[in-house]
Image 1 (cartoon, rainbow, N blue to C red):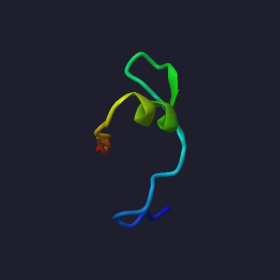
Image 2: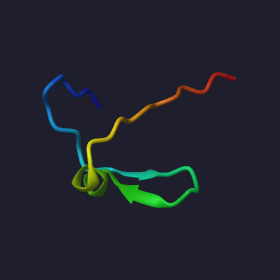
Image 3: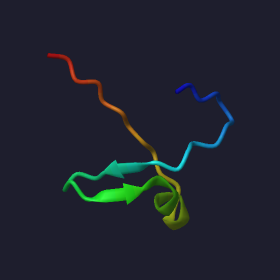
Image 4: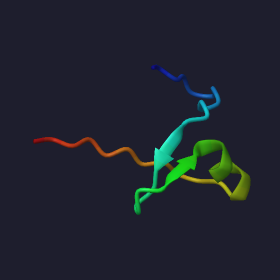
Length: 42
């Protein structure tokens, strides 16, 4: 999936550090967030 600059991110469910599922839309409601995606090599 490609997302261009300025396009809203889709509402997806991600796992937090403890493994709990969190909806992306619920994070935006609290305050601005920065998502960091780390690529695993190995």
